[in-house]
Amino acid sequence: MVARFIIKYIIRSPILVRIYKMFLDFDLQYWLKLYPWLINIFSISCAYLLSNNKVVIGRVLGCFAATNWIAFGFLSEQYAFIAANIIFLWIYISAIVKFSSKRDSYKKSHEEQREEIARLRRKLNKDTIKAEQFYSKKQNDLISLSNSVIKQMEQIKLEVKK
Image (cartoon, rainbow, N blue to C red; front, top):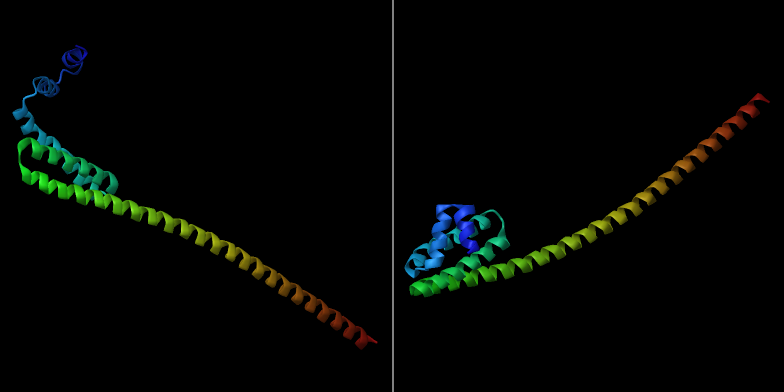
């Protein structure tokens, strides 16, 4: 009752009304004509997502499409669909498993790289501090040497004046 009200007064779309009537009447022959088109939408979306580097969601959508093609093979008694899409399903699932393990290894290597960068920064900071201390010490040595040379020059001037 509510669904009919929504379809009749709110949506008023002839396409949606036709789909709604299809579900109410449920003609298997009509559904078998429409079902491959719906599955193709999923398959094309899968290909689009995979081509745009949406690897996991593309493969999950591919699994969904492959299982629907298997169901279509059963409904239409076309066993080639079943065999082919079982292979596709196996390929998609194995690719998801392999990719997730690679992604985990990338995360681990990323963490290792972060730790290595942090270690190198600490080492660089220590080396920088040591270099600054060494430079400061050499500068102080140079200043004290300059002061001693100046004192000696003053003593020599005083001795020469005498």
